[in-house]
Length: 389
Image (cartoon, rainbow, N blue to C red; front, side, top):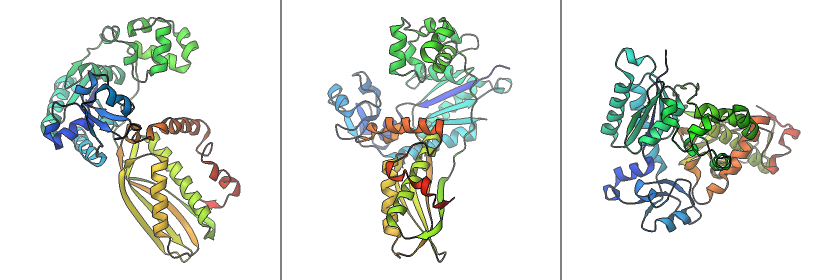
């Protein structure tokens, strides 16, 4: 049986939510992002894109390209709430749903042809989302994730496109290579330097040549250019929280040591969040004293998966909570109210400068383990071995 995979993507999601809240923004150029020149664009309306404005662009450049744009700081809590509403509609209606990000979904419609017709089903689902939320959403349907996502991108904004089985390569061939998911600027430029400008040419390149040039990425590029993608739909599961705590071998009042432990816990939790594609909207710390009395304190925050942002909140909470100056037996950190989100949520007011650093550090941890890299102030924690997990 051929697979049937749908992809749905909310159009300019942050801007769409802002327009629901203020209809005066309709039809006007809108940018959501950091207010200063050091910030970046998190989302932009289609009215700004004709001037060349794009997501993740430095705000300074965006202002120059579209000086009449309305700049909004953004409300992550509102975006999360609207995303949850759309997610609930998807999960309640479709057989299998994967939430790829705060505004992007994959649906496994395999086998639905014999009952309702997959295309008819997802079109009606798209209409339902628009009607019940007021948000614009685009749709693509094909035999796999890659082709469906690219179909959605071609259908945007507020469109829908079905790629019939056997016509994948015909659809992909004329498209520019930079439209392949995960084909970044450097990869695109390398391909163009090789004389490969469209996907049709890429699909006919010798696989060994691409592997020599790009390594494992070369195999992925060749497969995607030929419409091949066997990656499964991962059923949506929204965890409620993520936490880590440490019980000390010896109770302590060493404030400097306790702060370093908290920083290490935050680093590890942030890595887990980013790896799973989540952000947190609530931070909680836990302290258990030598007499076994346990206290917690929490703080609602704007959604984030940034080490620096969450470390600041955790340390502030600890300063407010640790008033008894007694020996501490256990300390812990919990991130609550987890929501799906990508790094674009953390690119405000200079945050874009550390996003590549987080990405590089996470890749090192993926390969060598969570203790392979971290802040210098914690380099001796493992050697000291004062902890029992």
